[in-house]
Length: 335
Image 1 (cartoon, rainbow, N blue to C red):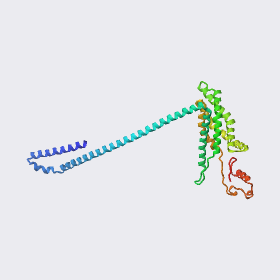
Image 2 (image 1 turned 45 degrees about the vertical axis):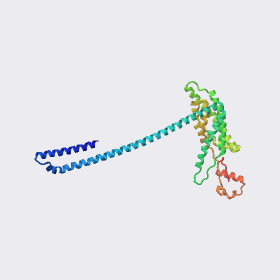
Image 3 (image 1 turned 180 degrees about the vertical axis):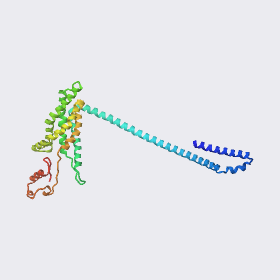
Image 4 (image 1 turned 90 degrees about the vertical axis):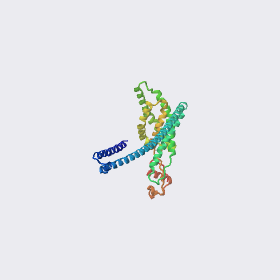
């Protein structure tokens, strides 16, 4: 609109200029046709060219404005469609979250009912299942670390180790701790003040970590490991003596804070499920500390560094020598 006004103003100026020239020629006694050369003066011609150029610019500006309006309309429509799609996605996500919340609340309600109706069975199944999941994760991590070259054979899943940990967790968490936590919560009340509650939590945690862990937990763990793996009493004893102290230190570093939160912030009926969930992480730590089974393929005596004087040894003696030379006390050597 501004450019149109400018063009119209220029045309009006030129018209005024023509009228002015006509008036001047009349005053000088000239015929209007005699004033035509004046209209052909360079200044007048430039004014005409400017008027035409301004008109072209006006048309071009109008065309550009219409193009911009069309583009803006298309962009607005596309943006509106994208907003509608995004709104649909948010609506779908909200629906999924609400469904998951409803499903989770139903599962939690059902699980809570099972805790009340069948506490021992629920505790045993929960503890064993979570511990087996933790051991499976640990074994997968160990298997990935064992493959150092592209051609290395994958490490097989150690069923015996998993069975030992699962059986132990069912006996320890599902049976013993169920009774132990009821005993502690019944004989060490939390009190009415926050200070009394925290002191009671510290006392219960200390009873677990200074009494049940070193006197019941670790001996039971080593015994179940030896039975499931078919170890002799001597081998089980040597394994427990070598691993008792480091495993107890790992146990303290993990379970002291976990059980303080348990007795300080978790309701009594949910304490064992909470401990079983924490045991999922502890199972990974415990399984990682367990000594893996070594399977060594040997094609000749020289492969394990045995001298020629031992080439006629009895097969049993050969395995014993190989075990002592190339493996730990808990490794199985297959030649």
